[in-house]
Length: 173
Image (cartoon, rainbow, N blue to C red; front, side):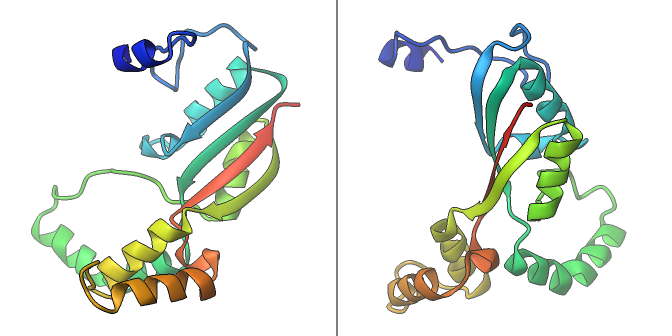
């Protein structure tokens, strides 16, 4: 925060819990969150409710969350038996990291917090393509096929299959 403040002295930076800020009601026109709301075990509801409280009527909310896309669903289907076995062997080995959302799920969360959804779309396709190549295809960027496959997949495969995140836009009525 100190570094940001020195680089951008015309702005005010604060450290706060995004579920319970100390900002006054209806004080912002726009709120943007890149990859934060998904990291709470109880889901994004508290973050969304706080966002609703601090946004002015007509204010806009833009959030990104991990996309539970086709690639992720296939990975989970293949690995669920392994995960169950690992949990039996080490019952306390798993811990919460983040939620992943389908388009309809994040839009439902947004509506439950009384926002009106405007749109939700896949973003960060290039990141998703590189994760697919590295994690699923077991390629490294040094591989001679990595760059041609990266370009081809980025061009031809749908965002719904490989995009890493969803961005959702909504407004406070």
